[in-house]
Image (cartoon, rainbow, N blue to C red; front, side, top):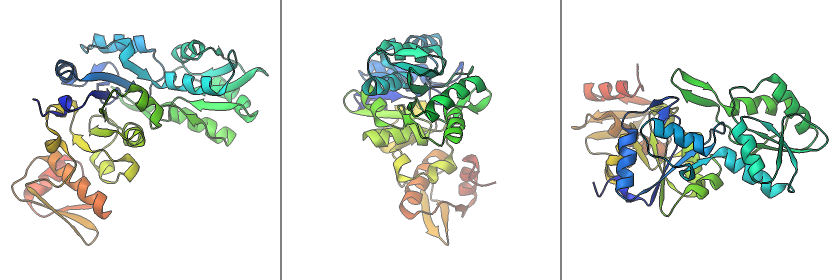
Length: 328
């Protein structure tokens, strides 16, 4: 396994929701693969845009799923948001927090004073995900932001993967304040580069499921990225990805880290013939049958030509495209 992706980098930066777990349910193979990476001498980091849990709580959650994790290996968007605030505000400044207690704790840890109600002393609003955020919280923040204070969002993920499906994420709440204030927040977490730079050790590979946060963050930070299909983004959205959201590698799930860079690289693949014809990607099997391999080849051709529609030219191609959900 010396040529496996999990051993080819100095560090692996794992997203959590949609990549390692769905809420309380671990994604199959994640504990074993992460353990194999550690055994190969690769540093493991967990990089999450979820600002509702402290690093120690995230590590505890991971350990409960059979994944070895230490608090200092966890990097959260609440930590990133607190650093942004500390760089721009004087010590002791009041910060109105819209989010969980974990975000309050990070604000306090950098020498600022977290509060829950607006006043003349409030110098900034910081917003992170919390399932308890309601209209009253948004109203306090709205008044402060309209008053001209600094507004920092831990992240702008529109959705949050869970066992029941996609739920509203912090970005949905940010959108409400954006509409109410006509203002834009400073974004601290992914896809901004600082969170990735803080977590990276040596040559790093980002592993995630979201193009607009995980992969865009890797691109912004100048890091290689592996996209998996266990979370938010789909084969169709991967094919249509803009340059700022394009991964280097693609696997069906996290266990693909056991494969080599050559196997997982997004590029033309033996066994599949793809040509852009009359506004569609015409797909023919020349011995290939693996749908994920086809998707790698489709992404490579679509990104080169700008053509995103697909059509099969034989039964094998039709079966693989159906498996990918690209035709009905």
